Length: 140
Length: 115
Image (cartoon, rainbow over all chains, first blue to last red; front, side):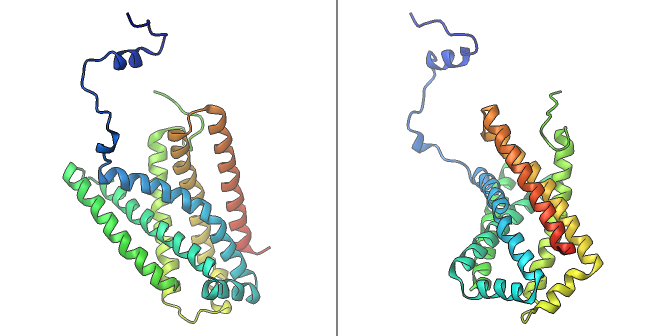
């Protein structure tokens, strides 16, 4: 006889004693593409927020004086780490931008079907991949 | 109706609208800055600081920074509320985020109008 559940644990109790089949092989479960782009939209948002430190630093320095402008210019022209950060942030921005446009389209009822959602997620990935490559070309 | 006391507009619909309006401002600002940098290959300090000394550019930039503050709060509030369940840790994280947003906003204003 199973132990009686404590208050608030009824759902766990029911799940454990359920006769319904359970899939224990989690590797067979995959996120659909729209779920992955949704998570990536959130992750790139967090990255961009942290990246604001570099963005505001560059804006501050470049506007403070001619020397500051040259410092930012030289960093972006010859410092590998600075280029990498710039490319990373531009990439996050590109994806966040494209995924955001997708959101705005859905808000005006464009492509709010299952097929439309998958298709728009695919377009988001392809368009942002192109932009990320172009951003890399721009930085280097 | 559940009223939340930590989100920006105290209502999901209000946050939804703020997120869209600020997103459009930020998209336009991003396109402008990227376009400007792409089409000014030999950019120098005089032209760059000249751009930011224009009143319209300061208005546009401040609008973008304020939009950024709202956009970041709505977005990070959503993310922290979704993933950080223990109230103490979540409130601590959200407090740090608010402080960071405030610092960025003041920093941005200082950059625009000079120290």
